[in-house]
Length: 140
Image 1 (tube, rainbow, N blue to C red):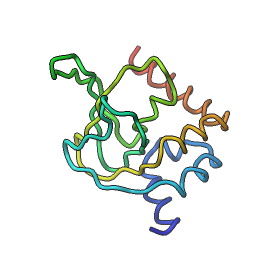
Image 2: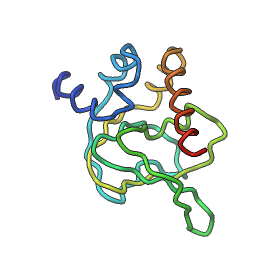
Image 3: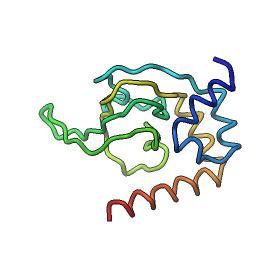
């Protein structure tokens, strides 16, 4: 996929277009767009998180394990979110399973690429803190 085509596809994610331009430029070459089916596991709470993603046309469902094979639905992630970055942003976030609720496309890359950008970019960290505050405002 050509860079312009990839950028126009990834810009469907409203969070990606809010990221600082240098972070976008650093992530873009590492992103690949994949199609995901309904019920597909994106993050398995039993395995390490190795990829992060920007939902483009899919919606992901977050579930917290409750024991005995039961899960509690805790939220959804769509084109205003990232998937898998909780392992970079916080250490206190418990295990979660993330599956595809609405099939579609997601742009993914290795979590270590994102982790490196998060370490390097004050602007990315500031953007993430701002986004957290917005999420807390909606809840509170």
